[in-house]
Length: 189
Image (cartoon, rainbow, N blue to C red; front, side, top):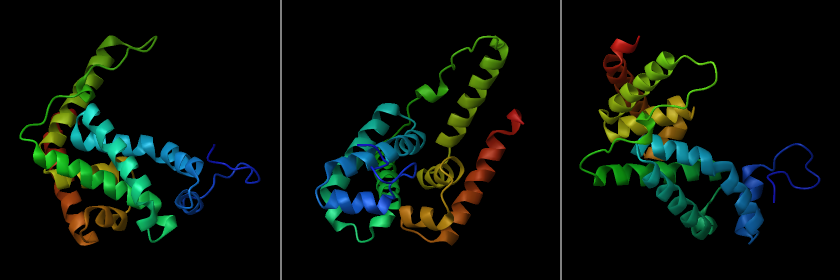
């Protein structure tokens, strides 16, 4: 099933409609939600965890749990925030359970595109490596706030809901994360 049902034209079916249909037993509607959110949730998890395999595990676990717990969702239109909150919390829990953070594919050299100068690719890879190292220096909460705001463009209210805190606390953590990252990335300006 595609995200756009017959009769909806070019407009995708809203999240709330898909969630309601999925709760009623429509596996295709849930599949559409999975297709819509799987990649963004993976990007969130991989940036918080700095580990692709763990991120895949988190997303799979979140989606399986969401299917089972869909009847508990009180507001169908809030399914996206619900999934982000679950992925964020699951990622933070895994991060807290670790003692060290492994190097990840985020630090690997990107593919050389035709006509691209090898020196530029090496410089870009070094910048990505430096950013990954700087992100590892943040607390798990700061990293989650920064990833949700800067990479996933979530509002302070959405981030606060995902982390179970207040928008004021989100602002503070984000300010601290930005300051720490700016200091760590000074050489790359």
